[in-house]
Image (cartoon, rainbow, N blue to C red; front, side, top):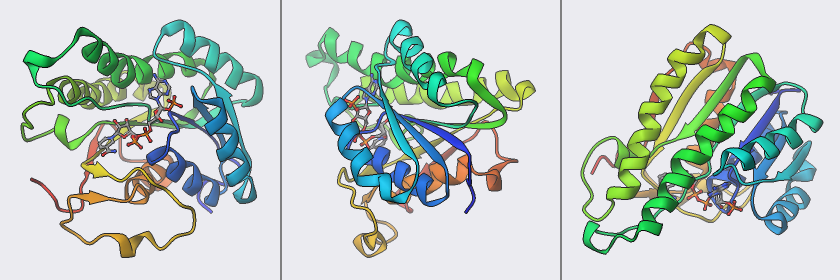
Amino acid sequence: MRLEGKNVVVVGVGSGLGPATVYFLLREGANVMMVSRTRDRLEELKRQFSKYGKVDYTVGDPSTAKGAEAAMKAVAKKVKGIDGLALLAGTYVDTPLPQMKESDLDLMINSNIRAPLNALKAALPNMSKQSSVVMVASVLGLYGAAAGTVAYSATKAAVAKSTEVLAAELVGKGIRVNAVAPKSMNHDFEPERDWKKMRKLGDQACPPEDVARVVTWLITDESEWVDGVVIPVHGGARK
Ligand SMILES: NC(=O)c1ccc[n+]([C@@H]2O[C@H](COP(=O)([O-])OP(=O)(O)OC[C@H]3O[C@@H](n4cnc5c(N)ncnc54)[C@H](OP(=O)(O)O)[C@@H]3O)[C@@H](O)[C@H]2O)c1
């Protein structure tokens, strides 16, 4: 197991990438702390995943600085030294500019930019030396130009740039910062299924397992010489 005894905090645990990442981290021996806004979902996941290892949760909303500080303070009471931090919170709106409401833009900025940056800032005092941070950008924030996605694509491009800048800022503390950039992921996740049978190279969408495994690898020390990069995870579907 590549993460035996390591403490990993996963921020943003919904129905897809979050649960898949928690599952693979547990299978690698990590102690996992989930942070998200929906208590019922967190409770359900804790019940479902406890058979795979040590998993707990904190309810919190890092989209404000105050919310992130409260969440990471609660995490610090249970977790002494974070070895891995997966910042997965994010959401999507699909609106051409003329129809875009101010609330759409606020939602994209709050969920896709403020939540990961606030969470990382609040977690920093509790991060171990040699720890690893993983953010989630998107292929739409790296290349191509999908009409109608300006708010989403712009915030994901900002995540990609933040990854590089934060890696430069934190390298002296021994903290790595990387990101994955998925294309389309399906939202469903079921532990122990044979997900490889559900897709083939070149498909437009993948099960969340394909991205969660890269997130997990970035947290292990197998990737210890990888820092400040955004890894596209699209199975060859470049368009
Ligand atoms: N699905 C795709 O096709 C795709 C493609 C490229 C990138 N991504 C990115 O991959 C990540 C995971 O996406 P997913 O598709 O797996 O979606 P998901 O299942 O909806 O997971 C994201 C979770 O993040 C949490 N979240 C959202 N805003 C938050 C906030 N302000 N504070 C704390 N938690 C928050 C939500 O949980 P609560 O509501 O319980 O807090 C949500 O369930 C996101 O960053 C997404 O943008 C997804």
